[in-house]
Amino acid sequence: MTHPDPQPDPAALRAFVALAGGAAWRKRVADLGARLQPGSLAARAMQQRHALELILARLSKPELLAKAGRAERRVLAFAREAAELAKSLPEGPRARLRGLVGDGLSGNATLVPLFHLLRTAALLRARGFEVRFDGLLDGTAHDLRITRDGAEAEVVCELVSAEEGRPLHKGDWAQLVDRVNPELQTWLAAHPGRYILKMTLPEGVSDQTQLSELHSRITTMLATEKRQDSSADAILKLDPLVLAGAQAASDPQRALPARLREVFGVEAHLAVTADPSSGSVLVMAARAGRENEISLAVKRRVAAATARFSGARPGIVAVFLDDIEAAEWHSLRDTLELEGVIRRFLTEPEAKLVVAVTCTTRQEFFALGDCAPEGELRFRNPGHPAAKSVGLAPAVSSN
Image (cartoon, rainbow, N blue to C red; front, top):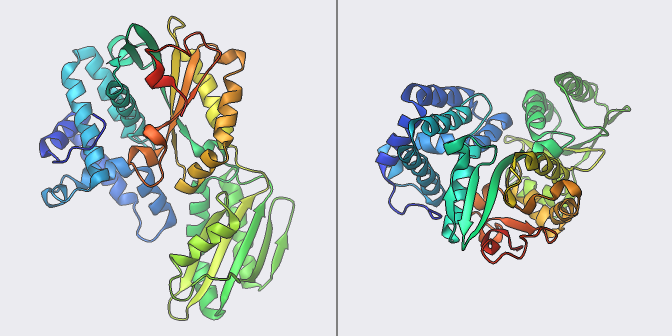
């Protein structure tokens, strides 16, 4: 199964909820609903992070199920896949699968690891491989064993958050924006105009204490009408906003963010606060003093994942890179930054069991925009003895 079901089946959703446990599912949906505070940046970020659960919750309403779009049908199809897999498994492996579902519905976790496993298996079956869920069936450290034309390989499915490579996490930025936004609204009402508050954070932000201190400095700066506040850990500067072509007054929530992204680049954290009554705007733009290291975060997790291979067969590390914006993902691909990091890793001794590394994101999962060809990036290890295996080629050939 690689394409969404053209006709969503409500029985598929009921089967998945049964697999999760009705009480656990209802508790999860209620918890997510309670945390979705309208208008907050943190809530929008949470909506994105928990999109799979929220989509399935929406589809429980028959009128919405009938109008399900392509992305929603895709999510439902994988929920059905999970339920059908559960039916095919003996009780012990079925309990392991229930455990994966339960893990994805707990705390800040998501269903992405489970759906990544199911999607990886589906992609490989579509390429002619026989796929066995070794991790579920036998409790192995690797997740899948694939076979084609006499060739075998083990597959490890790994989830990597882009936050692991950011000096300033998007989640922390969302918290800061939500805390300071009421003060910004008040300040804008008293100071009509267009402004930009630029923040340079040399070492990023690593804890709640730093967030609180930064919030205090911003509010104090606005209250005292200072234009600059500098220290070793943060440089704040308030200037008039001058951006040619930015239609802030007429459409501050759409045209301006796009123009700001062009100016400040994919690594900048941006937020726009507008006063509709006056047309005033204040932009916050923050950057860490050092570049993001998302590709290196992927490399570290891939290196750690090699310990999950048995060594009896070639290994494939299938990475799902989560918590990344489309512009960031395109940048990693277009600049070949990710490719360079992974290919260097494949020359190192710790990669000796790895015949290939693949990488995918929500862009590919939902088939959005300019996603990677064939649903993933693939990097083959030319130094591995199985690199030229004809049987494994559809799973490991570089694209």
